[in-house]
Length: 446
Image (tube, rainbow, N blue to C red; front, top):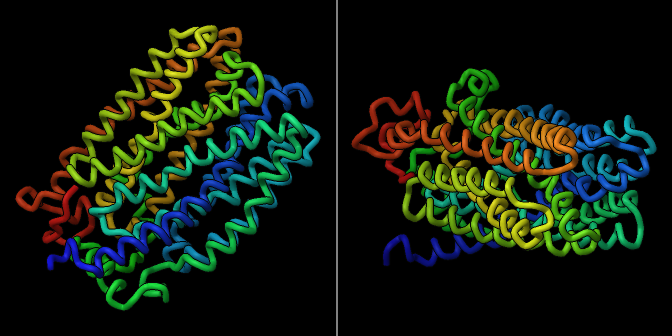
C-alpha cells in the first residue's frame, strides 16, 4: 500500500484536521470578533460620544498600533518557549481589554481600551501560525492556512447577527462586555486540553502518526525545530517584501470589513437587517478561501493563484465605486464578490511565506510580516473614513481606494515568481540558502 493511502497517513491527517485546526480557528474567531465588533458600534458611538468620521476611523484603527508591539516578540517567544502557554496568557489579557471598551465614557478612554486590546492580541497570530507550521508539511499548508483564514468569514457570520441582536435589545456597552468575556472560558479550556506545540508532545497521537508527520517535514527539507533570531528577521529582504504585500492587502481587507456595515446600513437601514445581510459575503468568502487554498496545493502555482485573486479584488472593488447605495442588490453582489476575492489569497500567501522565508528568520519573521502588514489595517479604516467624509458621506472613493490597493499588491506578488520557482524546482535550484535557508535537495512542490 502506498504511503499516500496508508492508514497511518489517513489517521494522522484526520486528527490534524479535526483536532488542531478547529481549535486554532475557534481561538482566532474570538480574537477577530473582539477586534472588529467596533464597526457595529460606530453609529451609536457617533451619537453617544459625538465621534466624527475621522475619530471613528481612528477608534477602529488604533488597535493595530498596539497589535504591532507584540508581533515580532510574540513569534520569537512562541518559537523559543511555548506557543501553547503564550497564547493562553494572551487570551486572558485580551478578554479583559475587550470588556473594558464597554466601560468607556470618553474618546480618550475608548482609544486606550482599543490600543490595549491590540497589545494583548498582538502575539496570538504568529504563535498560531507557528503551530500550523509545526503540524502541517509544506505540501498541505495552502489548505491549512486557508482553513485558518476561515476565522474572518466565521467571525463575521457570528458577529453580525449577534451584534445586531445585542444592539437591538441592549446597547453597545453590553456588546463589548458580552463578546469580550463570554467565549473566553470555552476557548481557553479547549486550547489547553487539545493543542500541543508539536506532534511529539501530543499524547492523542500514536508513535507511528507522530513519526509520519515529522518525517514528511524532514523530507521537504524543513527542520523540526526553528531557532531563529531577531536580527535575521529584520535583515531579510524577502521578509520585508512579504510585509509590504501584507500591508496592502490588510489595508484593503480591514478597511472593507470595518466599513461594510456602514455601506450596508445605507442600503438596508436597520441594525438587524444589516447583521443578517452581512452574512452572505462571508459565506462566499469562506468558500473562496477553501477552493483557492486547495487548488494551490493540488496544482501548484501559488503565485498565479494569489495574483489572479488580488487582481479580481481590484477590478470588483473599483467597479463597486460606481454602484449607488439605492441599488441595494447591486451593492450586496459587489460586496459578496469583493469580500471573497479580498481574502481568498491567504492560504497560498502564507504557504509561500513559510517556503521563502529563511529558517533563521522563521518565527520573528512571521511576526514581522503580520505586525508590519497589519499597520495597513490602521491606514485602511482611517483613510476610508476620511475619504467618506470629504466625499459628503458616500463610499465611492473608499471602494475605489481599496481596489487600487489590491491591484498594487497583485503586481508585487508577481515579482516573487522566480524565487518560488528556484525554491521548488530541483532543476532550477542554484543558491537555495539565499532564498529559503533550506538544503539544495528540497524537492517539495509549490
